[in-house]
Image 1 (spheres, rainbow, N blue to C red):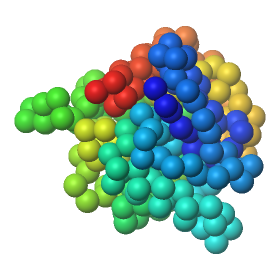
Image 2 (cartoon, rainbow, N blue to C red):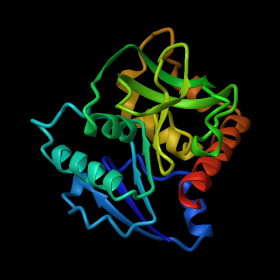
Image 3 (cartoon, one colour):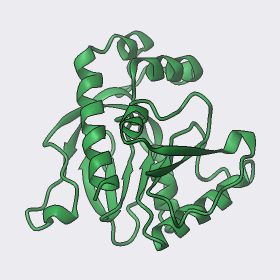
Image 4 (cartoon, helix red, strand yellow):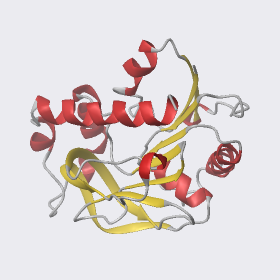
Length: 231
């Protein structure tokens, strides 16, 4: 398996995705945009994973590499490269196809539930989330669904939490890959965002989440990965 990763900041990495790839002997390569790495040809990849980051997809003036990344995402979709976008990655997928990305009515930071959106007629062509899952959030923006996307999950704070474009392309607004180490890193670098709000937990609440939260989210991550990359 040939897997490539678009990484935007050093402290947001693969998390629990890494052992899933290692178990399959994946050859993992990176484009680290913070280090000005180039984007390689993508057409022959078995997996493209677009990670999160604190920037906005609308920051092209300050971060011109965003234009090239959006074009690469469009190219991946054209070539039917199996594609997973996480948080900023999901927003990039939506925006690359012309959908708006804009501030959500409220920030959502912490462990909160999402609800699966199911349609009995979707069958195996659409990934089915559980009726409710507790997952890790860290986002202040949201997006309109791009044309022909299927909504997969929603929450009280944010209507569009996950979507699917093709059998092999899914965007997640939340972080199923989060490990305890990853959560600590995000709290360390995002402490300034932890201000009182209806859907913003304190640093202590974030870090004191029981092991079952991580286990449940990481298990669901594995199900998404298997669906996308072992079709």
